[in-house]
Length: 212
Image (tube, rainbow, N blue to C red; front, top):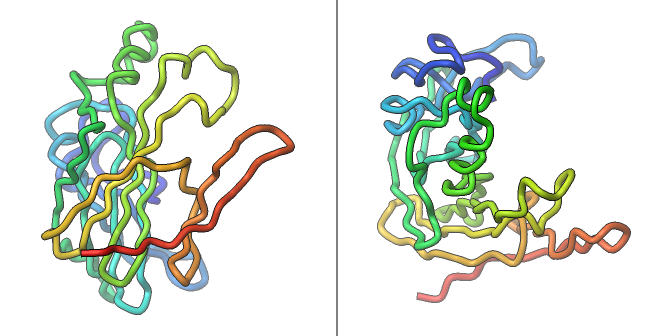
């Protein structure tokens, strides 16, 4: 993830030139180029939750990207000197909640109760994973009302969901997830936390199989 945005601050909407990700050299010393265009939602509105996430298929030089409050999945071809946007896919899930209004930084400071209310009314895209050479899982969650009542992180605070999508954009499948997806391995196994109970945490290993 890019540590700074080239042309806009967290107090303003993202501009068209803003890039979310940095590609660095193998020595981790120099940024080769940046890619990742914030969806129109972020250019038209002012939203503090602006976290971006990506997954990469190195052999295909393909990257999938998602952004905190947007249901847009982006696919990029990563070249030697630039990342080219290949496709935008609007993900569909009945549980997805678009933010009802701007979520500005000053609102978070001056009216935290209202800001928290907007968070409860919004969905948060958490991660994206390639689960096959041509298939992507976008993982998001909704906040439960007790999110602001419990101290620290607790999986009981959220309701996890997902959307499977082909990289062509022609096929999608909404999912109810058994827990939060923590990561994947090179064989496309997903690691999902099934229990967050202290001293009894349970992580399951899953593989996506699509029957058409």
